[in-house]
Length: 380
Image (cartoon, rainbow, N blue to C red; front, side, top):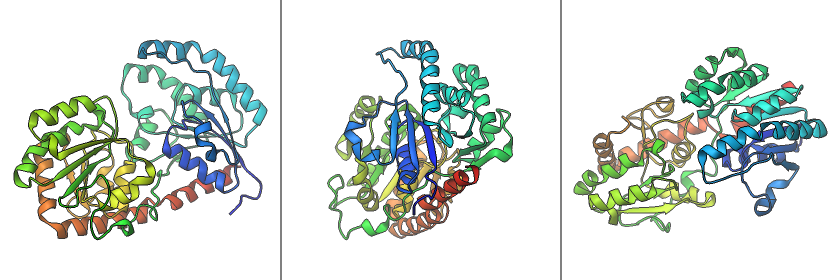
């Protein structure tokens, strides 16, 4: 399908995010004219296939090894980037300006653009309670109040947006969505033959990054209790992050390192088969924005999930019916639920089927993007 009037949407976003790239590619494939003011370090030459119907502009960035210095430089560059982004918007004159994530660049865009503005809150941009967040609240309020529509992918995010003084009628839930044809039980094979999986054992997979907010520590702490009961169990810890060395040392101190594989970041192309063939997916995150992509993809793949309570997880995982909800930072209960699923293959099957049904009905990628398409075209 091609959009008849070649609607021009300019995104202020980070192309480093797979969610952003998928969103943009969807509308590029529909024939939209796409411009991106990209504030990430994403390499266009290495991803030239993304450039169909798309132009990319970069604000000025200077990166050092000091987080504090980076923040200071970013503040000092605001006047220059104000001029640069203003010039870009005047030159390209898009029909819609859509900011993904609310930060200084989205504020500059909102300040300089007089057309239709849409904002997508990602979670931490409106949920954070840090001193910096309190200081920037006035600027974020400006962006959202000027926006015609604000989208988010979680009810608790919606509630937080309202605390910025935003008219609730402007807020719409648009999930990032899951490709339910790509993430599908059809990838399950009669025997595990995926490189990272052990065909002779139960394979438990975690796809959250190795950062404190995802608390993979709790999963590592659960491994001794699981392995005492089922010594052949394999734990596949995917992702990268600052906690990797600490987690490896913890596994060694517990004597469970031989059953744990730290894979690093998994290529997106490898995920569908990996998830469909894993036996159990675990997320120990202390907080999520909406439904974590890896949780949704696991459920779409028919893989039973164990996730922490909190955020909107209870709206997606029906405890004891399509997965297990466990308290955050509670390795003992997590271990019990893992053991329960190891010992009950029929429960794993039921959880997997029910989880996929939930995602297909409520988080399908094409359905969610169709909602967004209607918003664009209603506002043009």
